[in-house]
Length: 116
Length: 117
Image (cartoon, rainbow over all chains, first blue to last red; front, side):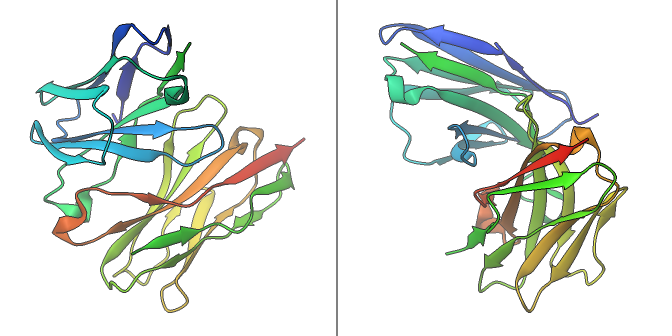
């Protein structure tokens, strides 16, 4: 089973709202990722968590706040977003960053975010 | 820095025929991994195939196979017996094989493949 789930599928929010995106996997993976994907573009890495600790923050604005409460869950808290933040947000997981030879990322279906 | 180039923004193929998508990359490393992902209109990014650079044998997964030319830094994807469900954006991706990669996948810009009935 290589399933990564994401909720919600769609989200519309105003610039003053606070919302959260959720990602879950039950494959025992210890690395989880957030990507942002604009239309007709490849995904751009935002954050990487390894063993529930933030490993990479690709200079993402502070209005995006990741959280990894346990090894199966990854959240992305959103606050005071801008219209240009509208995009598809993809979550992915992989077995273990420390074991590169077997480290393949599996993606969730994404959350389509629209900021008004 | 590593780069991945997909020179064909769009391609089309008739159902049941074979199509090849091109990908080239640039790296000074000898240990790395290459991937093809497909992203249908449903949006989900799906792993198609993975190739380890240290393996000379080309990876295959059912109708999907790669032509990995390490010296030429080329990693093309061949889809045989194309099906309507193969219609998708295809991304080629590179990942370094060293521990410092932190899982950073470097994607090409993608090739939009349309399979026509």
